[in-house]
Length: 119
Image (cartoon, rainbow, N blue to C red; front, side):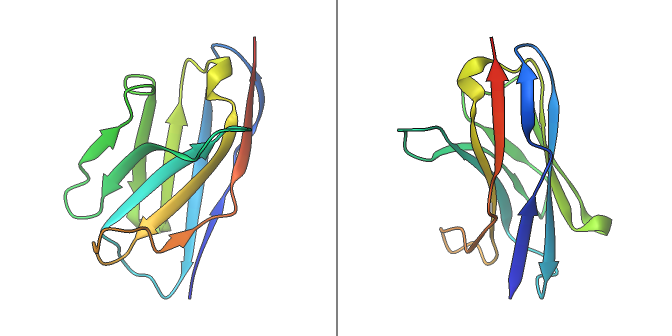
């Protein structure tokens, strides 16, 4: 079994930065991709960013590109989402997820961490 635990959320003012770690534990030694998603009240969950295990290539949603950075630390089995220049519209619960085998879906999800950005 694989467990993902996000942390680092909080209440910040617009323009501030936060870094969200996603700690992975369990039987997973590697994965195909790790992704970050978010869900604001009344909205569907949306994709934020992802990183591939193999070459660390990244991909971002247009709404966060240039402000957010996804990364990973293999030694710590932890992924990160660095969020800069936060805006009120970034307010949401942020989830990390992993796709272990590259079969087109994310297999494991964390419980989420709340990010609230005040104007």
